[in-house]
Length: 58
Image 1 (cartoon, rainbow, N blue to C red):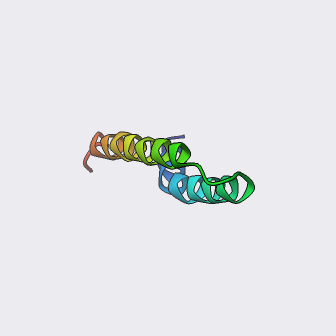
Image 2: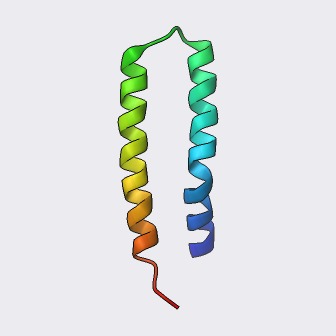
């Protein structure tokens, strides 16, 4: 289960970027959407970095 979690964390930016790009194509340009997505990605990377930092050293 742990390996799946870390694999999803690594793949999440690709999936999120693809979804965000698809959303931007379907919706008219929105500065607010870009701003919230940037903040969301920063929070996600902070959380992801913390998850990897808490990995036990082998």
